[in-house]
Amino acid sequence: MRSLLLLGMTIAAAGTGVAQVPPRPDVGYEPTPQAAVEAMLALAHVGPGDVVYDLGSGDGRIVITAAKKFGARGVGVEMQPALVRASRQAAADAGVADKVTFVEDDFFNVDLSRATVVTLYLFPHVNARLEPKLRRELHAGARIVSYSFEMGTWVPDTTERLPNGRDVLLWTVPRPPAHAPDVPFVPTPQTIVEEMLALANVGPNDVVFDLGSGDGRVVIVAAQKYGATGVGIEIEPRLVDMSRRVAQQADLADKVTFVEGDLFDADVSRATVVVLCLSARVNAQLETKLRGLRSGTRILSREFPIGTWEPDKTTHAQDGSLLLLWTLRAR
Image (tube, rainbow, N blue to C red; front, top):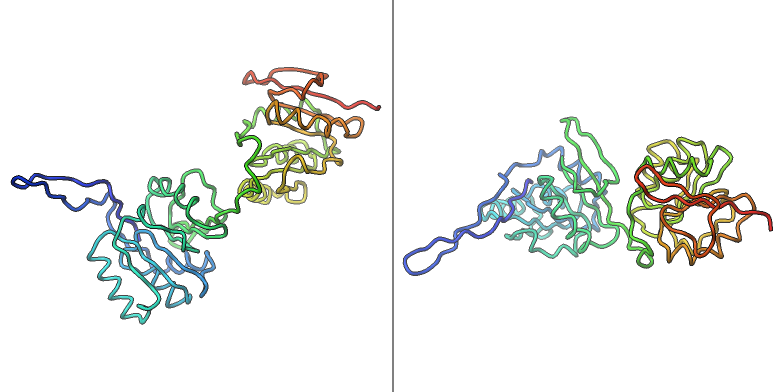
């Protein structure tokens, strides 16, 4: 159901007192088509072990269907009292009143930690506001499925087009990383990635390792544009999952690999090129590891030196950022 979002309380004077007027929703109620309801629940692989929360549950059909057809338990969160009453009656009529609950509240106020599946039929700006709450309160492995609309910058795992031309989008809450990343992820612009790989003379015989690979674009571009084999090392599970999906969509799964792990622990002995977009501190900690690579290996860093190791070449990218290149010599 499309939700009814609390915008705030309007207050009006009544005699000498102040009375609260019920909140005015910013989105009208619109039922989710039953075919879409079943597609959403099927895409999320809902089953008897699930607890499905529908945010903005309207007439209750999503959680009622989850209980009746898929054997799940369900909680609908809805602001309009009349719709909550109608949902409870519909659940009783469907024989699932013991499996579903309807809460009259603003879903931003509701604890979602019990949910294994969350369903949404909201507007994009509401989904975007919900994203931090969903990431914070849901457990790893919980699924989120939305009818029609995306959720901020969170890339869905799967998108399916329905016969009515609308999309159903699925996200899975990722595991947290083993520890906080050493450097926050900031995407390297595509043009700069290409300049870096060109500076290192990357070609089809190279194995390019990107330490802290983020969304995977360095090794994907290395494979796609330069014909290289690529390996990305990344500690953030959601970024690893995203990178693997992008590689698969680009038909590069046989050319690139993404490893979920700490870059300090990674075996980079196969590398002929190593790419770094990290920090001066992390680069300095990597120096000994990098100096131990085989002769001819090229190491390329954006912006930061590697300890006191003098680069063989220094240049500036189009955006003015510093690019530093080292080539290992036979000892």
